[in-house]
Length: 143
Image (cartoon, rainbow, N blue to C red; front, side):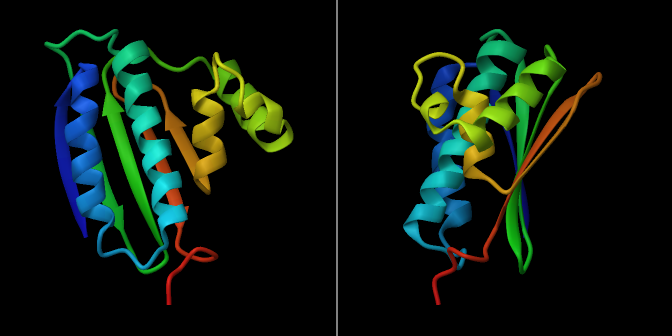
């Protein structure tokens, strides 16, 4: 199953994204904790795209693709904006794994939250930047 959504680079686009994500997650075999974590990661990623990659320019757009298979769900966000600096990705990944206090800090925690909430983060920078967030069903599956 997959679906694609195109949204403007405005923070008010997060509402329609959250609605589409909830609809996508409704039939998934997972509990509320799984849903919350995936929603947090996807909405945080989208907010970062809007604020940092596309600089809240409403005439610009980004896409969000929803996918699932038997083992996991994943969302791919794509934009033509500013790339995430490599050092920020590396630092966020390392701090999310090693520093619970960093997740509670006020500034710069978005990428850490993303890493903490999903099983895989794949980022590719280029003319089109793509960020794929994958969360497996194992461990949180509702039976």
